[in-house]
Amino acid sequence: MFVYRAALPLTIAITTVSHNCHSIELTDDNIHDKITTACDSAQLLQATAELYKSALEHLATYRQRNAKLLQMWVVSAATTSGQAKLGFALLQALGNKRMAQATEVLASNLQHFLKFKQTVDLKTGILAHHAARQTVADGQAKEHAGSTFNNQPAAGGEKTALVDDQTIVTTNICKQEADNSIGTYHHTLARPLSKAFYLTPDAALTQLKYSAAISISCGGTGTIAWKSSGTDIGCSDSSSAPKLKAQLKTSKLFATAQSTKQNIGKSDEESKTCTADYPDHVNYWPSNQDVANAACQYKNKKQPTPPDLEAITLSGLKTDTEFKALIRQTLNVKEPSATAEVDAINKIYGTDESAFKKTFITDIGDSTAKLWESDGLKDKKYSELSSTKHLEEAYAHAVAQNIHNKAEKAKTLISKAKEEECKNKGNTATECGSDKCELKEGKCVEKEEVKVENDGKTTNTTGSNSFVINKAPLLLALLLS
Image (cartoon, rainbow, N blue to C red; front, side, top):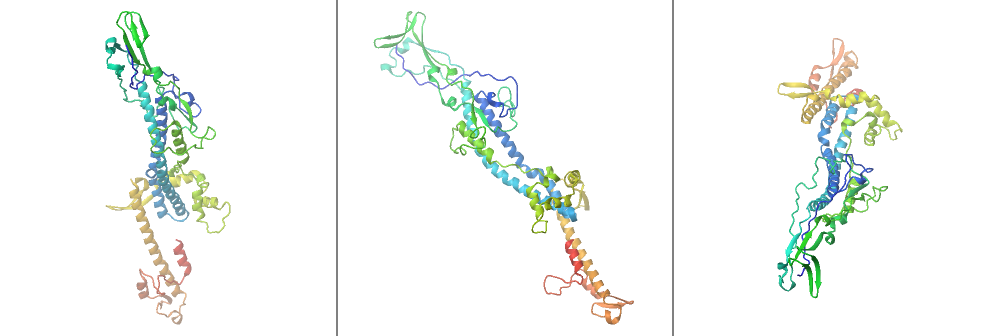
């Protein structure tokens, strides 16, 4: 009988691997022998991506976490005075800067994360497909009787269906048994690796070892042997019932190579030096080096999340370059001394760390603000205001009240100035007589009609938007308030 080599389907079997017998937290120092299978490699990459994703999700909620404390500072800056007012206003400015930074960092990090994640997902798919093919058991040997080789098909045509088809089962392939679980023994990853991954070699994912996986043998009930006689080649059987047995041993189709080290950067010592940019976005079969390049680029280009506002400390403000830049704007000198900024912080906030924390962060919720409700104007603790919306409403009231208070104070100062103007004229008819002053009971006082005229308004004597009063120090005091 005659045999013709045919094209065979690509299937594989389980590759047996060894594992350590307990779960550990994977680090750059211990990972070298913990990743053994294609699924281990896939889970390591996905765990890395998940850590970066969690950091992005945390960054995305920055405003939500910090908005209420920031708004408390805003309201406090509107309701306090003196150094306390300045202290809250400076913290408000710092909070606004950090809010803006968080938004910018999120946009930048998300852009780079998507590039990294695309590469990881493509590689994970390749690894998972490889692992799925390895789960296919060796096919059974398929016997072909001699009658099927009786010049059928004629003239040595193709003989197909030498082996049976096999099906890859992909259900839950490489799925982690628990969140952040890697491998059979559920190793964990607390932080992304910085030096190297250990991954299934690229060659193991691309090489199909047909030379070892496909076998053809003779079968029969008597003495069997391969035959090559004259123009014939095939199998012989002394019982005159020869058979040809074909088998695909999927367990031998793929190399059993262990995972290999893939430096993330140029080397362990130069882990921050990337060897190339992100892989091209249409590279649908990323190599291990491509994965390393993507990880290196993201590691270098992602920006840190601004610290939460509640984490601010007095000592931290003294070394915070952004806050010191704000403090510099409060120093009315051209060339401040080397300690001027720290001295100003001490003047505004004091030197007691715990007192600072209590006043400006932990106990600020006990501060009160006025808020109009359906039954009238109420004093409300910040902590009783359920949302930043209510704090913003309290801020609106505080600003309006400040404007009202300053207007009332201006009236009082102007009235006092007029009284002083008449009082200083002297207590005789000659000295006191004018269109604004009159002598009454031996004293020079402001005329009643002038008081009425000036009630609720200022006298414009310049034709501009300014007003003139007799006592400049009183005006200065008003402006400084």
